[in-house]
Image (cartoon, rainbow, N blue to C red):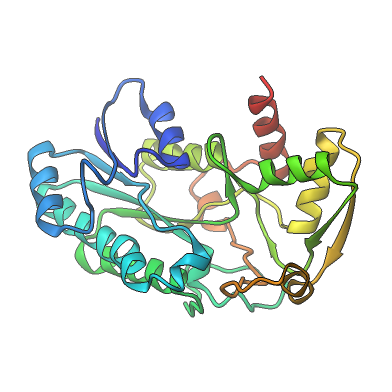
Length: 287
């Protein structure tokens, strides 16, 4: 297959490149090679390449910064995927796009998890712009996969696991938010889900794609340290307490980021449990 991968310098794109390298013809672009916010540039590039698949890993992911940069975030997260969808439709390409739990309100009671068709109610600029991207794709083509993920970490760059590992090594105790619930997701496992979906040719549409199982940032931190044998006291705090202690201003975080994977399971897609994903990530970074 001929595959175009956007956002080539990002954590997820690097995993996608590695997974799809064998037997496929890959073209990777960053913003200097293809500005996905430029509709004509996208059309010209896609029209010349005519890829079988476009895997869009380009995104504005700085949740707090997005609050101050609505226009830029919306161009990248909203207009960009829309432009890719229009171009893909014209040349007969399939589109794979990565979205987020932030398209929901995040206030669902904790005994429940979000299904793909549940009402969208984003409360942050990031969530609103990502929903714009989803809608732009849906309105302009039919042959697409939108994978909503959450709490993503992986090889390369900073991430929560790396940060907590360093803090846990340097400090005697940590205060970590314990009232936000979701699924830590290893980028390699998200990539594997994408790969399985394409290989199995599952029905097009929106799917939730995180590691299996739910936890909190507090319990995630405890597991990160425990798996590495790092001794550090971890104290559970509320989001409100954390903001007050750190004296920060931040975009609202969802208290419930639990995404149901039942739709993936129905298609025979294998999804590893989050603790297993963490174990394999730590093994890889320690090699």
